[in-house]
Length: 359
Image (cartoon, rainbow, N blue to C red; front, side):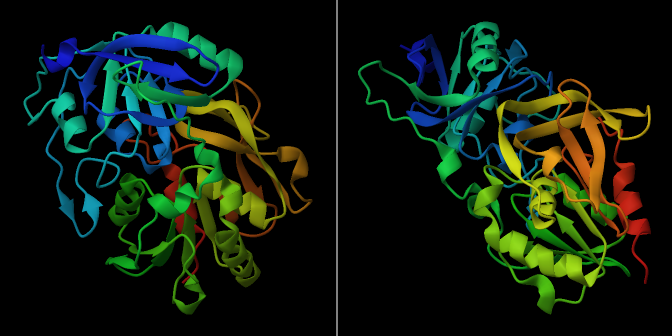
């Protein structure tokens, strides 16, 4: 019996069971089951640290057709992916393409998952599964190869996932002139690439690092996984930074941390936003942008203080997509302006951030 003929099942904490066939590593794994509606970009999604602790359901029906490019890491920066490793706990798809075809591919998705000991399951009705997650919300699940295997449901919200996704030491990417401290909460590498293309020096520090000892011109708060309530050390350092008045720009988790530093609250969303085509509107205008997103928590706009106001609003559910300070150069967005793969409608925000820095 071949690997692709072996049975596998996804078991959800509500008792639902989805049967399919195994690909990738033949191991059991548990995590929060979430879905992504993007049509392309599975290498980018699988290496996004924001998926730490989660089993990813890709709703696009065909996955694996273009294989995987061999990764290269130079100075702690991946050439093609969003990090150095796969971060999902498991992968669920409708139809896995066994014969990949792309001129740059050097291995199959199956081989790549095996290298990182990540299980996959295909032959699942992902439309039915996505509908269930939309109605009941994201829930814990487990991928097993045999129904007799022990099923353990893990809730990643209780862990400090940011600490898992962050770097362990200070890493400097040399540039010219402007010095940006990037607080790494699980940063996607294309954020660093976007800053590098603009010639700045990026000083990447761990999530709980006291960066006030460093000489810098602006502060960048990265994306990251899980519950922002676990990042008390980051919020404490950030409040000191806000008192200094230097420009601050946050993305995704960075939006939530900036809001908490400003006194606002965050909340767990029913099933989060994970797609490439989320429309957001700039507050106070009719300007709309298409964005890429990956988050399960959001800022409670009603708790913003008088010195803060919404910057962007989600056109689908009216949730917060960004905040800004009324007087000072502090702003953040819930979406990903650096998206790869995905729309880059809002990459101009990097330029807005750098233009706010006075040397």
